[in-house]
Amino acid sequence: MTDMQGRVTRPGPTLHRQVVAYAIAAVTTASLMSTTVYAQSVDLSQWSPDYIRSIAGTETFDTAGHCADVVPLDYTGRLTYWWTGPTEASPQIEHTINDEFWAAWAKTYPNIATDAQNIDYNQLLDRLRTTLLGNAGPMVVRLQILGGVEFASKGYFQELTPEDIGYPTADFWPGAMKSVTWDGVTYGVPTNNETMAMIWNADIFERAGLDPESPPATWDDVVTYSKTIHDKLGISGYGLVARQNAGNTPFRFMPQLWAYGGGALDEAEASPSYQDSYLDNDGAKAALQAAFDMYVRDKSVPTSALTNTQNENQSPFIAGQLAMMIAHPSEYAKMVDLAGQATGADKEVADTVVANMRYGLIPEGPARRAVVFGGSNMHFINEEYVEGGFDEQAAKAFACFWNSPEWSTKLAWTGSNPGNLAGFKTEWMKERLDTIKFLDVTTSMLPSGIPFPVIPEATEIMNIIVPDMLQNALTERMTVDEAAADAAAKVDALLGGGL
Image (cartoon, rainbow, N blue to C red):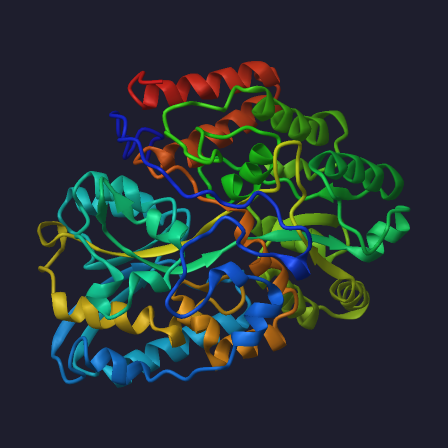
């Protein structure tokens, strides 16, 4: 595998997105201020923790009965499916729900022989590229929100709308639907959508002389807090992630870049053209400088940040050796799991960490508060690229089942939210809100979500060029200005010199 794999060298057409609100005043008053699209099942104009709780558990859904109207339950066929599911780093509840899903699927459609492969997050895209070149792909694939447009632009994906599997498009986030639209054609269904939050250890904050109940309000504060914690306690302040060719990196660095006014392109603007590089503007360089200050100047982040994903932040956090990080609600569930496995003195430390975990809004910057509008999408692969041919009815039955309000909610249990907005009205959403601490905080960040550029080159920009820019600056191979200029030049070359 090389960083050229899957590269697209022609610029995509200009695409436009709706205005996304830049900030929310507080978790309890968050609302989707700029969204004028109303979903059939929920009212996005009222979006807030109170509204989310008010609709949870208000409706019931018959998943099998609904999907029977799409594909008869006695249909006989075959299905091949690739996705990234639970890993060793996942909380146990994710493994339990995964097992329950496959048992329910087999019971509901017992005559559809299913070959499902759970493929590592950082390997799925490369493996799919290789198999499609050999016409040996699966029928259905679930990809991170960043990955689909690359394959759609090459003609690998079929047209696919929510209506094709029995659901209205209005029941999915507008930003999520944009992520499955290429050249005016819809080619997928959003399975889940998510935003993250800032996590901190209140005990560490207090011992470092910081307000234990207040997260850093700005990214400049993150730099200052991280240094204070390191200088006073000798531990890492912030869990910087800068690994190359790993999706965790852009999901944690882009909110910082956008907050200062930078961007990969102009994706954070109200009406982006996706033709103007912002990687070397003053905002992008300020964000990169902040990362440099933490890693090189202050040495207040893990020295292993250059090879870390978020998984590598978990052990130091539960050991009380890391004060802040960005992640999903699943981090709390994971810390509870890790504390349950600890013994002796480690158990005491772990229990203290869990008791002192706090979640808050991701810090804002001079330009805005921002977070990646993330998630995953399900796609159908064109028959000529599928090993053994494509079974349309089996694929539709499976997509209906997975993306139902029931399973869209359950399969997003600890770390995300249902892609099907009707899931917010289910009993399972109510159970999640009642049992998953801090879920309402991360859900409240959705109005500040910014999708990655919806162009085929987005995968390489985010997973290769942006991490390379970080690496070049943090290893001091280049100055901050040189690293930013180098990254912008690479984007220019990738888009065919069209900037």
